[in-house]
Image (cartoon, rainbow, N blue to C red; front, side, top):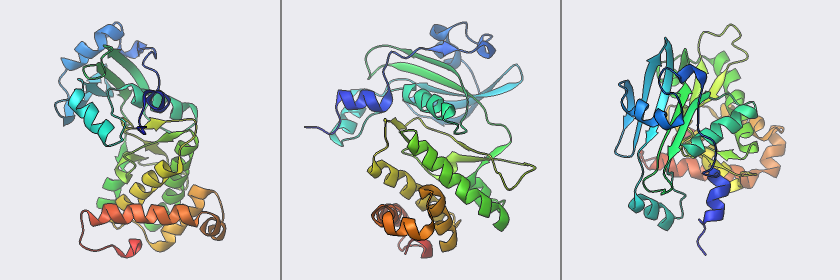
Length: 285
């Protein structure tokens, strides 16, 4: 039997019967959900991604900034390709909306959803849209590393925060599937540097279950470790600090009780790293 089936898909990505809505602050753009997609499609904005099946851009309305994602339908070939590879295809904006709302309910900082629409019962041609409030005065951890904005004291506080956010996301039954440091945004110019505010973004491929399976936790944490190694952002002592915070256990205890998990995380990070490099970084050896 295929590992991807309709019941599994419903559990992971939510029912297609969830309510579309437009928040009051978007009423100048669209009166209701039926108007949202065409209104967004007609907008010009700062383009972040534009491919045949999806468009992501930022726009302004009444001096407020928002992000919009439009899904134009992926086509049956893309759906079949994913199913053959035992992957669950992303056919619209709904599971990003579900993941964002669930994580917000669980106290994980994420962008706030202010609009969502979905039309069509055919998953290959379904059109959908999602609008979130733009995060103000934030920068991705990837850019923070590249711009040398993270000093040692700040890194000391950031590492457990990233680990705890990832753990809380997994405890909520959500796995990201694109869990890289570029998808963690840091609030800049905070007065209390010991309590940094981080946001998790870009959850359009996220999966939702009652409980996150170990193999998906391994993939998320391994991807996170790989992306940190790409930027030379961690030392071994930093990795140990992450392990303590993610496991919520003393280091010796998690090394003993969770050694299989951490071994798989390392293997995942090594495989990703070797796709772009001829040899491993010192962190991943």
